Length: 485
Image (cartoon, rainbow, N blue to C red; front, side):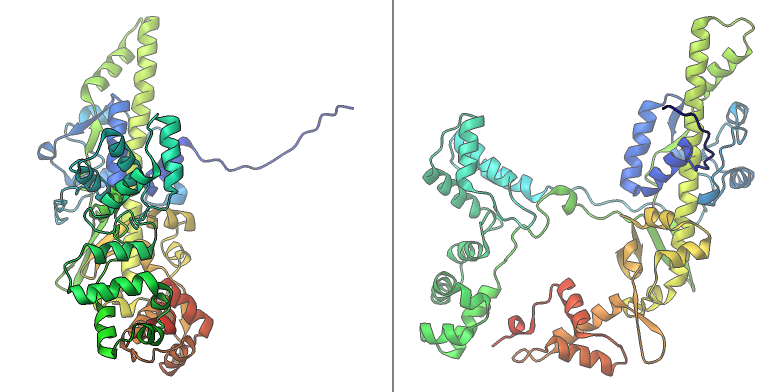
């Protein structure tokens, strides 16, 4: 049986302008630059202005400060905030650039984009004397490398796929030869299938002392498991070596690169990080600026506004003029809110970065050891914004300061109690663990229990399992594998 019933519900929905603002908030400087260029292409009402033609006036700054709210959670949709007449009357208006301090530094020139390792390998591949089919196979091998430069795919399956999909018939024997040739490209050892093969390729193509190279090759070939697990006594006994000879051979192996790709196989990982914020110390004060001088400066097109205004003043409007007016009005509203969102994004980013600077002042003054425990809620409560807003700003953005370049996430960490009753950041504890491991006796490295005991002596209450977790995050091996001769 069908029934009708009324239901009262309270729902909270985001306006299109709020959604646009939140999306812009997530973008870093480089992504925002692309977003602005895309908007310039899509919206004819928007146009890019030349930096040299922009003259900022103090009264414009004051008007813009009042028209754009700084609070993320009270974003208002007010169509009367500024209208067509505002843009018609202001010859130099550029809302994206307003509120800029004259003292803000000009953007640093970025380093030119480097060629990725994968692209470099392709260039080297073309220099080899290979057939067209072998070159295609080589391109597929290089394209399959992981972030450390290893070839983890099944070579036979790759050969079968080339035969099935590209009608390229190469024997597995010839494919092995192509792979071996790629492994000798720079950096040597690239495209190896495992660590053992990677180290062996480097030894065989090195110019080290022939005797120690021979011993190193023998250890890696016949005693690799003992080498990985640092069973040096077993190796010494089986090869009948003196302690000094074994030590010299192991030192040679340790010079080899276990990760030829070094995490930079692709160009986006190779490019220099562009900081979103710049913090400089001027006399006794720290100044926070946004590194956004390279962003396109956008404003409203005068010619389109005049067309919109003329259509508005016509007594008789044709259907075509109505459609034109409707189109221009929609684009004007879109452009208006896009510019407002850019400015609000700027205000929000600066507000959050200044709050982080204030909380972590000791870090910027004295270094990583003085990093304080801090979570998103601390900043959100301090500046009156939602935690989700802090998360959007922090994610994927970097700051350049006298202490170097750091991701904003770096400044947020949990804390552990100390004897003094204060809390110490877990990042500081990781620094201490690394320092303890760096200075431990190499013949008898400290266990996790011993490291925990040392930290307890420093007044830091920490469990052994927590030490183990932090050590693993630092990629420090267990004590047995840190042992040296």
